[in-house]
Image (tube, rainbow, N blue to C red; front, side, top):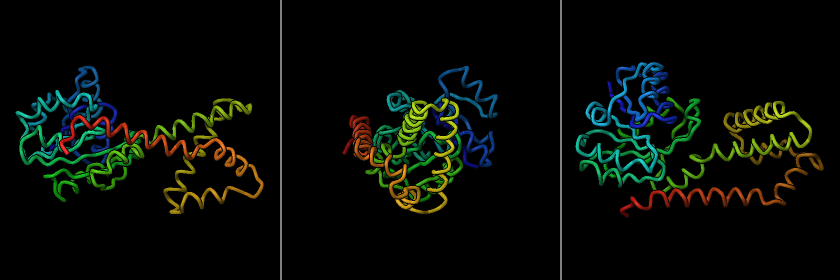
Length: 270
């Protein structure tokens, strides 16, 4: 059985551990690192997975999942470089960081797969995009797909598209939360109690997402089905267009892409 080590058991790292266990992985085949002892003890109690230090994780792992914040990557690589074996598959969940950074700092030939997940991983509904580094082959991508399918859907993309993916789906849940927040505020403005406004909007969002996911129809078709001539919906759409909501979303996602590029720029070698 493949031994998997998760470096950094924060929200995403913990969600992956939970998904792997629910997907049938044995706790004895998983380890994690966590810098906060209290949180590490809590994870072990909750999942039965052992917490170790970075050196031991590297020694034990066939697959090493790095799930730390981008600003914390340098000390982690400093610890990994002397102890990791070049056969170990490294899976990076670090936003903005190119595979070339890991390949440069780790033993020659180390296979690296870059992943951009998102926070719905915590409820098993993530969208993860994966890209192979210079030394990762089809078998490495297939293994990463198998692992991540326990916590959502997976798509393969060229690494050159990862910054765009980060902006679109990595940050995507925050855009939906922002819109839901604004719509709840609108309900309050119209005299609906906050709790009821939240219930109305959240269930509408869940239902709309299910229609998009399960029906296979283009969002334009679904929107038009709700938009009657001279009705309430078209009046709302007119106001959204008047206030440039579509253009604002395009600009926002482009800005997120640019920030992702900026975060990784210091580590790029191309």
